[in-house]
Length: 127
Image (cartoon, rainbow, N blue to C red):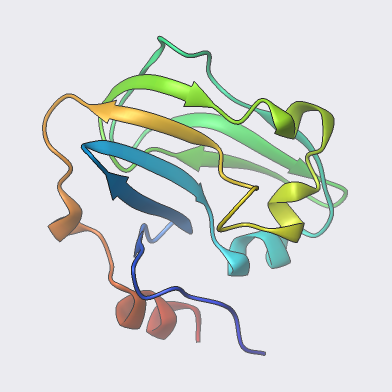
């Protein structure tokens, strides 16, 4: 099976994706991760203003067959939370790289994208 792995994103080995826009990091879970989870029924996310730590869990994505922690690629302050997911968690399945994003973070120690996997490296990991 082939999964969507956009070239412009960076990835964590734990299947989160990131994109950077004006020093803001947007985080979601990959197409592979949403497929592995199955139908997402609940999302637990931090509040705007909360601090997240690189490599540590910041939330939970729950499906009909699993509960999975979601990990932050950076340390910093949560600027925005995708509140639409509270009413429509299925957006994580329907559009994992678009409307199904999870949080936006203002990184406190730079973005550190170099430590993350590029699309080719992530694609090789999930192959």
